[in-house]
Length: 257
Image 1 (cartoon, rainbow, N blue to C red):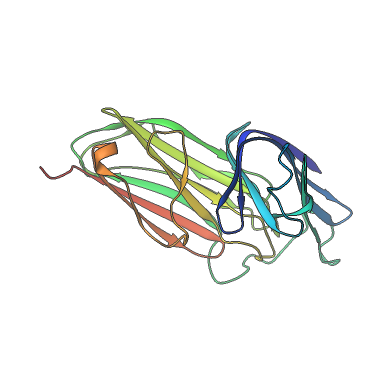
Image 2 (spheres, helix red, strand yellow):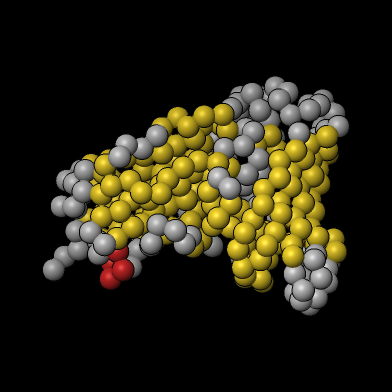
Protein backbone atom coordinates (compact mmCIF):
# COMPACT_ATOMS: atom_id res chain seq x y z
CA UNK A 1 0.00 0.00 0.00
CA UNK A 2 1.29 3.46 -0.86
CA UNK A 3 -0.30 6.93 -0.85
CA UNK A 4 1.41 10.02 -2.27
CA UNK A 5 0.13 13.54 -1.53
CA UNK A 6 1.52 16.60 -3.38
CA UNK A 7 1.55 19.66 -1.10
CA UNK A 8 1.53 23.12 -2.64
CA UNK A 9 2.32 26.21 -0.56
CA UNK A 10 3.16 23.98 2.40
CA UNK A 11 4.37 25.31 5.73
CA UNK A 12 7.07 23.30 7.52
CA UNK A 13 7.14 23.36 11.33
CA UNK A 14 9.47 21.88 13.92
CA UNK A 15 8.22 19.72 16.78
CA UNK A 16 7.65 22.88 18.88
CA UNK A 17 5.14 24.17 16.28
CA UNK A 18 7.57 26.90 15.19
CA UNK A 19 7.46 27.84 11.51
CA UNK A 20 10.69 26.96 9.69
CA UNK A 21 9.75 27.36 6.01
CA UNK A 22 6.65 28.81 4.34
CA UNK A 23 5.20 28.40 0.83
CA UNK A 24 7.21 25.26 0.13
CA UNK A 25 6.57 22.70 -2.58
CA UNK A 26 6.59 19.27 -0.98
CA UNK A 27 5.54 15.67 -1.52
CA UNK A 28 4.39 13.39 1.31
CA UNK A 29 4.45 9.61 0.85
CA UNK A 30 3.08 6.95 3.18
CA UNK A 31 3.72 3.28 2.45
CA UNK A 32 3.25 -0.10 4.11
CA UNK A 33 5.26 -3.08 2.86
CA UNK A 34 6.19 -6.33 4.59
CA UNK A 35 4.94 -4.98 7.91
CA UNK A 36 7.07 -1.84 7.72
CA UNK A 37 5.46 1.61 7.70
CA UNK A 38 7.39 4.46 6.09
CA UNK A 39 6.35 8.11 6.02
CA UNK A 40 8.56 10.43 4.00
CA UNK A 41 8.62 14.09 3.07
CA UNK A 42 10.57 15.66 0.21
CA UNK A 43 10.85 19.46 -0.04
CA UNK A 44 11.99 21.67 -2.89
CA UNK A 45 14.30 24.10 -1.06
CA UNK A 46 17.44 26.04 -1.99
CA UNK A 47 18.36 27.26 1.51
CA UNK A 48 20.85 24.80 3.02
CA UNK A 49 20.72 26.13 6.60
CA UNK A 50 17.07 25.60 7.56
CA UNK A 51 16.93 21.98 8.69
CA UNK A 52 19.14 19.97 11.05
CA UNK A 53 19.80 16.29 10.56
CA UNK A 54 18.21 14.27 13.36
CA UNK A 55 15.59 16.91 14.21
CA UNK A 56 11.88 16.29 13.57
CA UNK A 57 9.49 18.39 11.47
CA UNK A 58 6.01 18.19 9.99
CA UNK A 59 4.34 19.63 6.90
CA UNK A 60 1.10 21.59 6.90
CA UNK A 61 -0.84 22.57 3.79
CA UNK A 62 -4.14 24.34 3.16
CA UNK A 63 -4.26 23.15 -0.44
CA UNK A 64 -3.72 19.40 -0.44
CA UNK A 65 -5.74 17.39 -2.94
CA UNK A 66 -8.49 16.44 -0.51
CA UNK A 67 -8.56 19.39 1.88
CA UNK A 68 -6.23 20.62 4.64
CA UNK A 69 -3.34 18.28 5.44
CA UNK A 70 -0.82 17.78 8.23
CA UNK A 71 1.86 15.10 8.14
CA UNK A 72 3.25 13.12 11.04
CA UNK A 73 6.55 14.17 12.60
CA UNK A 74 9.38 13.00 10.34
CA UNK A 75 13.12 13.09 11.01
CA UNK A 76 15.50 15.04 8.81
CA UNK A 77 17.69 12.49 7.02
CA UNK A 78 19.24 14.83 4.43
CA UNK A 79 19.68 18.58 4.94
CA UNK A 80 20.91 21.23 2.51
CA UNK A 81 19.14 21.79 -0.78
CA UNK A 82 16.06 19.63 -1.37
CA UNK A 83 16.05 18.08 2.11
CA UNK A 84 14.51 14.67 2.81
CA UNK A 85 12.66 13.52 5.94
CA UNK A 86 11.54 10.06 7.00
CA UNK A 87 9.90 8.11 9.78
CA UNK A 88 9.63 4.33 9.92
CA UNK A 89 8.08 1.74 12.22
CA UNK A 90 7.96 -2.04 12.15
CA UNK A 91 4.60 -3.59 12.96
CA UNK A 92 4.60 -6.31 15.61
CA UNK A 93 4.89 -9.70 13.92
CA UNK A 94 1.63 -10.96 15.42
CA UNK A 95 -0.32 -8.27 13.54
CA UNK A 96 1.15 -8.73 10.08
CA UNK A 97 -0.13 -6.35 7.41
CA UNK A 98 -2.66 -3.55 7.87
CA UNK A 99 -6.17 -4.84 8.22
CA UNK A 100 -5.39 -7.49 10.81
CA UNK A 101 -7.74 -7.55 13.72
CA UNK A 102 -7.10 -5.69 16.95
CA UNK A 103 -8.84 -5.40 20.30
CA UNK A 104 -11.97 -3.28 20.22
CA UNK A 105 -10.43 -0.83 22.67
CA UNK A 106 -6.88 0.39 23.09
CA UNK A 107 -6.42 2.80 25.97
CA UNK A 108 -9.12 4.35 28.11
CA UNK A 109 -11.02 6.58 25.69
CA UNK A 110 -13.20 6.01 22.64
CA UNK A 111 -11.64 6.65 19.25
CA UNK A 112 -13.49 9.35 17.33
CA UNK A 113 -13.18 12.90 16.11
CA UNK A 114 -16.14 15.25 16.14
CA UNK A 115 -17.08 18.92 15.72
CA UNK A 116 -20.41 20.32 16.90
CA UNK A 117 -21.79 23.83 16.42
CA UNK A 118 -24.69 25.18 18.48
CA UNK A 119 -26.04 28.56 17.37
CA UNK A 120 -27.83 30.66 20.01
CA UNK A 121 -27.46 33.85 17.99
CA UNK A 122 -30.20 35.60 16.02
CA UNK A 123 -28.38 34.93 12.72
CA UNK A 124 -28.59 31.73 10.67
CA UNK A 125 -25.44 30.49 8.89
CA UNK A 126 -24.92 28.56 5.68
CA UNK A 127 -22.47 25.70 5.44
CA UNK A 128 -19.38 26.74 3.44
CA UNK A 129 -16.12 24.75 3.49
CA UNK A 130 -16.42 21.25 4.87
CA UNK A 131 -15.14 17.74 4.27
CA UNK A 132 -13.17 14.77 5.50
CA UNK A 133 -9.82 13.22 4.65
CA UNK A 134 -10.18 9.74 6.10
CA UNK A 135 -7.36 7.28 5.64
CA UNK A 136 -7.13 3.67 6.79
CA UNK A 137 -8.40 3.27 10.34
CA UNK A 138 -11.36 5.65 9.89
CA UNK A 139 -13.97 3.90 7.80
CA UNK A 140 -16.89 6.32 7.65
CA UNK A 141 -18.40 9.68 8.51
CA UNK A 142 -20.79 8.80 11.30
CA UNK A 143 -22.35 12.29 11.18
CA UNK A 144 -22.57 14.72 8.25
CA UNK A 145 -23.66 18.38 8.57
CA UNK A 146 -26.75 19.90 6.98
CA UNK A 147 -26.75 22.99 4.79
CA UNK A 148 -28.03 25.47 7.39
CA UNK A 149 -27.14 26.23 11.00
CA UNK A 150 -30.40 27.75 12.21
CA UNK A 151 -30.64 30.71 14.56
CA UNK A 152 -31.90 30.32 18.14
CA UNK A 153 -30.53 26.88 19.18
CA UNK A 154 -29.76 25.43 15.74
CA UNK A 155 -27.22 22.61 15.83
CA UNK A 156 -25.06 20.81 13.25
CA UNK A 157 -22.14 18.40 13.54
CA UNK A 158 -19.58 16.34 11.65
CA UNK A 159 -17.97 13.23 13.10
CA UNK A 160 -15.80 10.32 12.00
CA UNK A 161 -15.80 6.91 13.66
CA UNK A 162 -12.77 4.66 13.80
CA UNK A 163 -12.82 1.17 12.38
CA UNK A 164 -12.14 -0.95 15.45
CA UNK A 165 -10.94 -3.82 13.26
CA UNK A 166 -7.94 -1.71 12.25
CA UNK A 167 -5.09 -1.51 14.76
CA UNK A 168 -3.39 1.25 12.78
CA UNK A 169 -4.84 4.72 12.06
CA UNK A 170 -3.09 7.05 9.62
CA UNK A 171 -3.41 10.84 9.57
CA UNK A 172 -7.05 11.83 9.07
CA UNK A 173 -9.14 14.94 9.49
CA UNK A 174 -12.58 16.54 9.37
CA UNK A 175 -13.43 20.22 8.93
CA UNK A 176 -16.55 22.37 8.94
CA UNK A 177 -17.02 26.10 8.34
CA UNK A 178 -20.07 28.38 8.42
CA UNK A 179 -20.69 31.65 6.58
CA UNK A 180 -23.10 34.50 7.16
CA UNK A 181 -23.31 38.29 7.33
CA UNK A 182 -19.73 38.97 6.27
CA UNK A 183 -18.15 36.20 8.32
CA UNK A 184 -16.81 32.70 7.68
CA UNK A 185 -15.45 30.64 10.58
CA UNK A 186 -14.75 27.00 11.28
CA UNK A 187 -12.89 24.15 12.97
CA UNK A 188 -10.63 21.41 11.60
CA UNK A 189 -9.81 18.36 13.76
CA UNK A 190 -6.68 16.40 12.83
CA UNK A 191 -6.07 12.83 13.99
CA UNK A 192 -2.36 12.05 14.19
CA UNK A 193 -0.95 8.68 13.16
CA UNK A 194 -1.35 5.99 15.83
CA UNK A 195 -0.53 2.30 15.99
CA UNK A 196 -2.06 0.15 18.72
CA UNK A 197 -3.10 3.39 20.41
CA UNK A 198 0.47 4.72 20.49
CA UNK A 199 1.28 8.07 18.89
CA UNK A 200 0.49 11.75 19.25
CA UNK A 201 -3.01 12.79 20.34
CA UNK A 202 -5.38 14.59 17.93
CA UNK A 203 -5.08 18.38 17.56
CA UNK A 204 -7.42 21.03 16.18
CA UNK A 205 -7.28 24.22 14.16
CA UNK A 206 -9.55 27.23 13.79
CA UNK A 207 -10.36 29.51 10.87
CA UNK A 208 -11.63 33.08 10.84
CA UNK A 209 -12.07 33.39 7.09
CA UNK A 210 -13.00 29.84 6.04
CA UNK A 211 -9.62 29.09 4.48
CA UNK A 212 -6.56 29.91 6.59
CA UNK A 213 -6.12 27.54 9.53
CA UNK A 214 -4.38 28.32 12.83
CA UNK A 215 -3.52 25.84 15.58
CA UNK A 216 -6.08 26.44 18.34
CA UNK A 217 -3.53 26.13 21.13
CA UNK A 218 -0.43 24.31 22.28
CA UNK A 219 -2.60 22.04 24.42
CA UNK A 220 -5.59 20.37 22.65
CA UNK A 221 -7.75 20.60 25.80
CA UNK A 222 -7.58 24.42 25.93
CA UNK A 223 -10.71 26.37 24.84
CA UNK A 224 -10.52 28.94 22.06
CA UNK A 225 -12.41 32.23 21.63
CA UNK A 226 -12.66 33.91 18.22
CA UNK A 227 -12.00 37.63 17.92
CA UNK A 228 -15.53 39.10 17.97
CA UNK A 229 -14.30 42.18 16.08
CA UNK A 230 -13.41 39.91 13.14
CA UNK A 231 -16.29 37.43 13.13
CA UNK A 232 -19.06 39.67 14.48
CA UNK A 233 -20.27 37.15 17.08
CA UNK A 234 -19.24 35.67 20.41
CA UNK A 235 -17.88 32.26 19.42
CA UNK A 236 -16.23 29.95 21.93
CA UNK A 237 -14.96 26.40 21.28
CA UNK A 238 -14.49 23.99 24.18
CA UNK A 239 -12.71 20.71 23.41
CA UNK A 240 -12.96 17.37 25.14
CA UNK A 241 -9.59 15.79 24.39
CA UNK A 242 -8.42 12.22 24.85
CA UNK A 243 -5.38 10.41 23.56
CA UNK A 244 -7.31 8.85 20.67
CA UNK A 245 -10.33 11.15 20.49
CA UNK A 246 -11.20 14.82 20.20
CA UNK A 247 -14.63 16.44 20.42
CA UNK A 248 -14.85 20.21 19.81
CA UNK A 249 -18.06 21.89 20.95
CA UNK A 250 -18.58 25.38 19.49
CA UNK A 251 -21.13 27.84 20.92
CA UNK A 252 -22.23 30.90 18.92
CA UNK A 253 -23.99 33.87 20.53
CA UNK A 254 -24.80 37.45 19.60
CA UNK A 255 -22.32 39.99 20.89
CA UNK A 256 -23.71 42.22 23.62
CA UNK A 257 -24.17 45.82 22.62
